[in-house]
Length: 245
Image 1 (cartoon, one colour):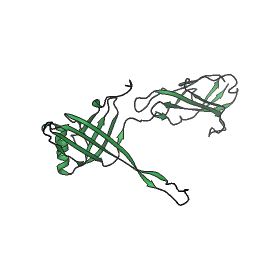
Image 2: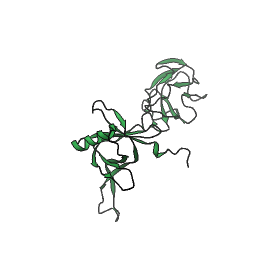
Image 3: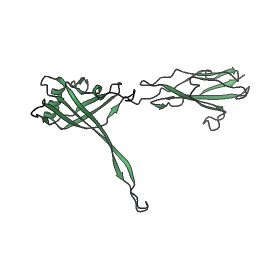
């Protein structure tokens, strides 16, 4: 078994027992199995000149969740499910994974059978169909960095001076895996022909400028972006302009 594998028994279903404006996500007591289903509807884009092959494109996304629990009449989350079923209400449901990843969305109860087998405990089962977006905190965003050295509009900068960016940060837990630094002449504001374009998995916060990469008495602009293991690339930083000595 992979050391990175997560146990399904540690993934729990939570139900909103509060209000829409002030949700209280409460774990469903005595729960057993659960399955979060996600899909994408396909659009047929086949035309007569597709050489006899069907062509399809992704359409609307959809999701649903199936879960069950042993019948417990005094469980808060279970009673919220029963009320939502009786009153035909939309209810927020959340699946919380053992690594802290949470999948959440509003859903309607489309099926609610109760299993009463001779030699088994009573089990309540629910199928909830998504009534909107399913969101998660798995993917976040990398905070756009800034250049701290050299300062914007600085003059007298040594042509081999190091450039330093702000600390790596993200909207969720992520690992800094690389950076891209670009330096170009001030007359090239779109960075069409950068004099330095360094993509590195080693030089992350600091760009070490080598001899001969920039010339003296010249105006430059620089920018940087960071890469996260989970969240990918940040946006480019604002440009800092400077003049070498």
